[in-house]
Length: 184
Image (cartoon, rainbow, N blue to C red):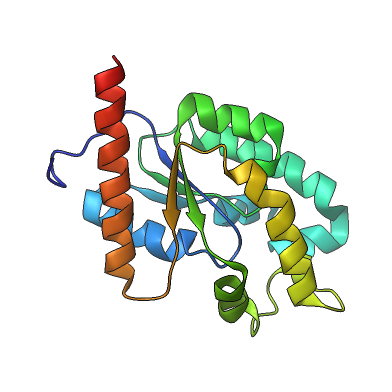
């Protein structure tokens, strides 16, 4: 199955921790497949009229997750493409159910050291604005990875050329779709 022949009826929904590469790889994947790319965080900021960090500070994580759930539900009903979700989105059971019914979930799994290397110099992640951000990141990994494991496809996120990761995702999607056809 070539790139041109790769077709899917549901959006590919990228799941994983902050820093796993969902946006960077998702944009390249969408370009390669010639489908739209949507970043749920960007759409949430657009709907809220402010940054996620400002929304967290003003309204708290609970209100953010409610808005995130509504935005992702809406996005899953738009034309097929690539949807990158925020790191905590898949933790919400309602969002997981929506993704399961209306998308193909792909976990970009990165180890703690890889994530920390990518995130340690950024101050844009509200959940990491703590006294010990690496310990917070480790706690999030420990909480989220068992839930993320319920996705349709897992791809290991490593450092290296982005196109290599895009190729890994393409291969994993091909394999998943071929297995689905055999199950029919």
